[in-house]
Image (cartoon, rainbow, N blue to C red; front, side):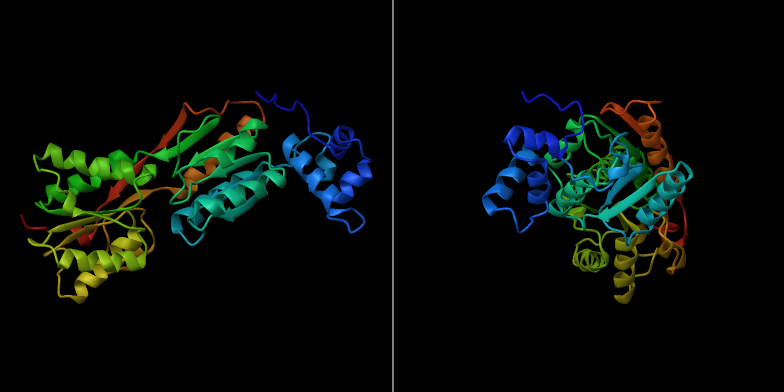
Length: 345
């Protein structure tokens, strides 16, 4: 087992191992024209082996702290994510920290590249909401091995040396489905996302639990799994229109998909909520302005962002310990609007 480095690796350490001058290492890492390709390759290989991070913030090398926090989110054009980032930035700035923000564009490959960039940027800690298809978490190992704290929020995973901050998605999914059942709905379509992501898996479990509590058999044909974007909402509506017997309700795992689905159903002369009731998730601003206004689950992105950064900064100051058993669960609530109020049994 490789021993974890006890101090920051410098070009002097690499030079000593390779038996070359520190200036040679420095130039090789910069691809200087005076250094041969063979030497550059040799130096870079050794630097990677030793866990060297290029010193972007040289003035902070001695104290090994940059007062910079990395944040990786799936996408920036999301009301929830923009709200969470607002909360993060407010707390970070108040405490003298800067944020480096990047988006994975919902791919594991881009997420891994972002993690590498954050590592090289010498962030003091990393905050992550996982991409749609991330399964292997090994790209976080280089940070964990250097004791750089990681906090996952919203979309989380079981990973050593990390803390998860979430809402109770199981409870929220159950609450949304129970609301539709209480309105008299019995054939409820659930539009969900990739089941490797905790948020969608837990919302589906809540949906199933509510059905069971009402003695309604689970029907897998009423589950539509997609990426929950606007186009997918349209396609889901087309699938619903082809179902026999036709469903009397839709519970979508986000508002963008719910609104798009609802609009397409209305274009086909489906009355919302008289023919099909609709519930979304996230309380995006669009949910308040669509007609009829959308029933949705509200959870507070800004509050989550604030709590994420508070916990990370407290850890960096030595006030708490980040570990995989530490999960913080925040509240959410159902906001009932016109889109779900009068479903007939």
